[in-house]
Image 1 (cartoon, rainbow, N blue to C red):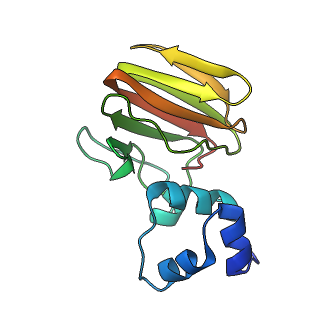
Image 2: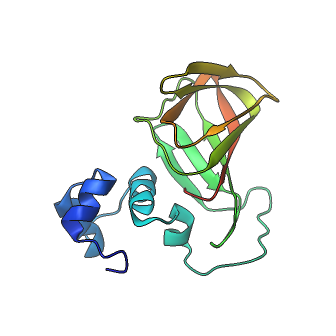
Length: 166
């Protein structure tokens, strides 16, 4: 309502069905993290802001802590910042071998990927694939449609976006 959108308009913008949004709204369905991400983009906010609506200026997330979500079959994302209202958004992704996101995404701002373990292949529409290994950093405008897949030994990597979108 605050975005002045009907449920049908929001569904179209987020590429989700109107019945599914209605089920979410009524507590009858739980959206995936990627569905929440698409909703956040359509609403001009971030997934963090939807999940943790209370802004926090300071955040401490210790090793082994942080909210953990399934990102894809064989991959999880751990939020490395708590609360909302931050100017950047660091997330740690851990993926088994050869895990790929099911679709490309795009959002405002800039994105940085830093590989901690294993290898990752970033695909940017119109640019192609870029293979990254341990210690590699890749930065790109996140308005370009992009996706990732883990290498033969899996991967653990940071994705940092500014402004927050996930």
